[in-house]
Length: 401
Image 1 (tube, rainbow, N blue to C red):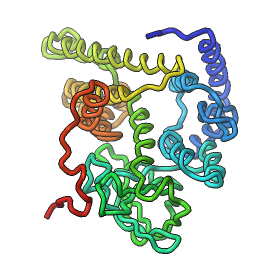
Image 2: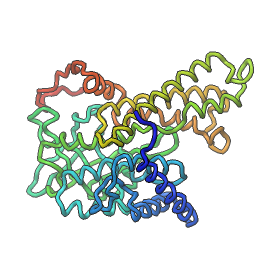
Image 3: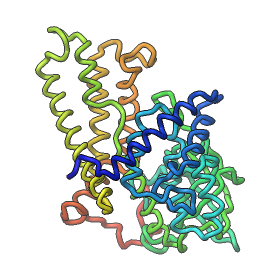
Image 4: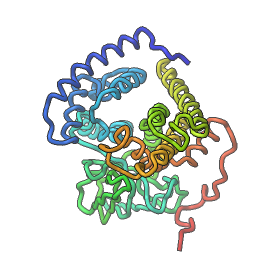
């Protein structure tokens, strides 16, 4: 691994930092009525400078740069209080799938507006009966002339309530094994027959949604890839998703160390408690291992290489540590830990946020169990898990009563 920037990377970092220093100040000086408007304004500003999607070709409005340049800009942008999360799913997962499989007219219509933040996309994969098995999709699409008629339900769809478009994976053939009867489409989320219901989360937010399809008509021209070959298309999206959610973030060992120096335990400051110090050491070792693993990914990008499935390791460690660390901090705060007002809590409620969001992060982008299978089979070369439904027609799979 190489922890240092090359001279070219250092120059790029300096230029990116200079641009951010100037433009964040200008952006913050403008009064925006709400977070969404502020996020769209910032996204448009980045797009105008070629920083919105650095690795995308210039003809699509991107920066025409390298993956390591994208990493460097992301590292520097994260140091500033700007909003850009609304576009992560669309630009990181959905639009790249459209770019890979749609025709030229579709790409010309959608890539630019998404890049500039004018339109927002979401990903419609998960279903109530599917659990962690994306290929267990039961939402049906039946061909009717030049259209497909879709009926079914999706769930845990992040940001659908404020999105304009989405990509959806549906079942088009039940006479073949589950992975072979899927088809991918893009769709307008304002289409007749689509009902979006936000899910109230324990954190108080409603970022996830249920989506119901009742005789929704999708033109065949909106298909991405071949009929019944949607699994191949979905893999492109899933690989991007797991890389995106594996980046970590949120509360870390340094944050709980700062808290422990201020909190009193039964025998004095919490930082002097031997049991807590042992847990703190474990978290620190995990964080360093995670940092080094990410550095391997960054080093590969710097050398022009493509990171492999080992990126799944990052999400497992980061999500579990966030949940464990948040629980420990809230317990250490004793009766004050149940307060959920950021204005009254250490670090503006960072640990309470970790408790609320940690479990979801262990599911999003693939559960711990799914990712452990990926690591075992594709990184360590262990024998594949036994899958008794691998060759059975989807219509013959048993269902609950």
